[in-house]
Image 1 (cartoon, rainbow, N blue to C red):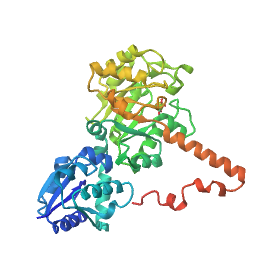
Image 2: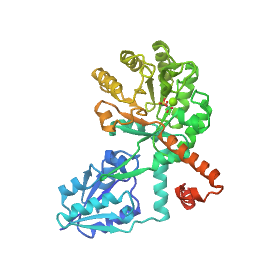
Image 3: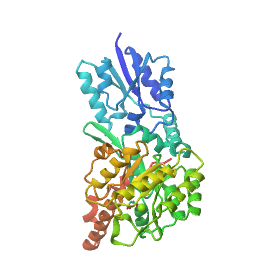
Image 4: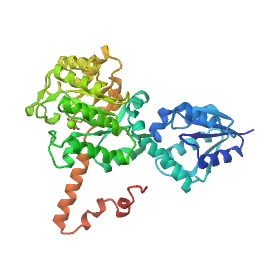
Length: 431
Ligand code: SPV
Ligand code: MG
């Protein structure tokens, strides 16, 4: 009897999947793969049910003869193991970037003369509806809020992109690339105070108040499913911070990062060029404690950001503060630097990890941008935030367009660098 393999990475089995299973069965004994959570998050959306539940879902289908785990998005390893005569897949992977997976399957099957069979993907109203329900389930606060903690367990490093609007949220949500035979996407979103303020034409000095920041959070929540880390600036007054913790939790935000500065906050990348005051350990730890007491779920994270390196107070000061903040209940530490090289960040992380092996470390490599994610990972970093690159790429593009329209007295000359009208009017999915 011939061996047929089909891999599934879904939270719901709908008629489209059943059709593939039914077709597969015609060719022989059906082995169904269930993609591991680790692989699924790189490629598809985050699962809303457990891996065990996804596996059981396939085991219950009578036409499935055996269920195996596929640990990688690329089929190479599992196909090498199973050497199936056929792989069955829906024809929906014929477009970029899923095509690299298809190419990988064909290349592997060719080694032993196996064949790829593509079944027309069922895309009727019912299937569309089910897929929308699954997507929307992932956007609900109870699912989204805990997702950062889940990602910390699943990812070697959580890749986080700056967002400041619904549109940038969509970019963080949907951008997916195939590169060097791998598929990748961002894991989480950083709602930067710098970029949220800049988008409103305001300086990054806590002038954009929390009501306005929450409005931006809501715009992003509405159109995305990935977890949000809010840049909470100094956290403000303790008496206000506790209310904000509750609000953020309720909305489905996963974490807030507050920095140990006091008085008029200025952006860290100014460093010591402007007057900035670091908070005392005593005050800042009481803010962390109050926030943790106010929290109502186990999901939410309060991450403490240390400004000692920014303010040139030295590594020792940064470490003392890190341990004090963790003692006070901080769920993670963010260490910031404005040096061109990552050395002081590496040194901090190595020293911190000598004592504390588990508390998540967050970094923002804006100035030391030559560093690779893999190097940060080697030094024990868990979350990397690309904090402002979307804003900094959009601004010069818009400014050049404005200048050229003025220069040429018409818009033709700028047109070739613009997104086509058809693409912009169809960019946002209709419900
Ligand atoms: C932000 O993005 O607003 C940050 C990071 O706080 S930084 O701008 O580097 O201070
Ligand atoms: Mg900020």
